[in-house]
Every structure is written in C-alpha cells, then in structure tokens.
Image 1 (spheres, rainbow, N blue to C red):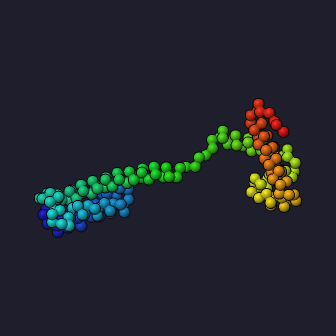
Image 2 (cartoon, one colour):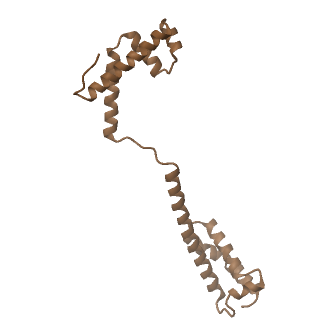
Image 3 (cartoon, one colour):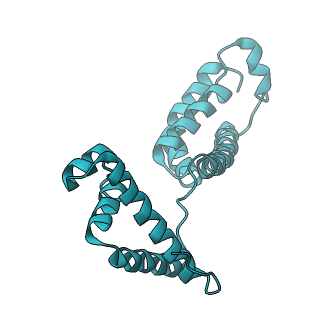
Length: 182
C-alpha cells in the first residue's frame, strides 16, 4: 500500500468503526473523533516525505490504522488524567477548601458567646446599648452619642467601659485563677 489514495480509502471505510473503537478508551465520542482525526494525519501523511513513516507494503493496513488509533487514544487518556491531577492540585492550592471548625472549637465558641452575653447583661442599659451599637451595629461614636442623647466623649467612655467589662468577664471566666480588677 504505497498510494495515499489507497490509505485514504481504507481510512474512510473504517472511520466510524475507529470512532466506536476509541470511544470507550477515551471516555467520550467527541474525544474519540479527535483521536481518529489525529490518526488520519499519521496514516495518510500530507507530504510525500512523511510517507516513509508508514511501512511500505502493509499487508493489513486497517490493523495498522487501528493500532495508531489505540496508541493515540491511550496517550490521550494518560494526558487527560495528568491534566486533571494538575488542575485538581492547582485548585487545591489556589482555592483551599474553607476551614471548618471542629466540634470542640464550635463548643468553645458557643461558650465564649455565652460569656459575652452574660457580661453584657451585667452592664447598665445605656452602656450595653452603646456597646451593641458600636460592636454589632458598627455605628460611629457621633451617631451613638446622638441616639443616646450624650456627648461624643461620654459615648466613647461608655463603649470603652463596656468593652473592658466584657473582656475582663470573658477572660476571668476563661481562666479560673484570674482576678477581677473592677
């Protein structure tokens, strides 16, 4: 089989069967068509100089064509798996999974929230409200002062005192040996 026309005829006769042959190897019919197209370029070279790569006098050119498709399909599968591993590794490095708290950490956070709430309940109403507006409402001191009907300096002292009180209570409850300085 020396003629490019004869090779083209063999390829055309087996094209659909080659796609069916390659599809289970590569995992999809679309990829199999790409593999068969690449096999065409190897089986029916465009340049006369390339024809030396195909053994002259093939007795069963279809078998040679199937071997080309099989080898290309296996190469495609290896390359695809390597790309998937690379992409997965990149995604893991680029976008790490969010860290979730362990049950112990969740329990500790819940306990700390309870301590903060208990400390807030110990405060006079105005200081507690000033603290909540600043910390939870993210309001500025002038807005807090206006809403509470006090000066800006007084609003600042109220928030500061409440913050110190909460911090001391949480710290005192977290460390049993600590003394309360209030």
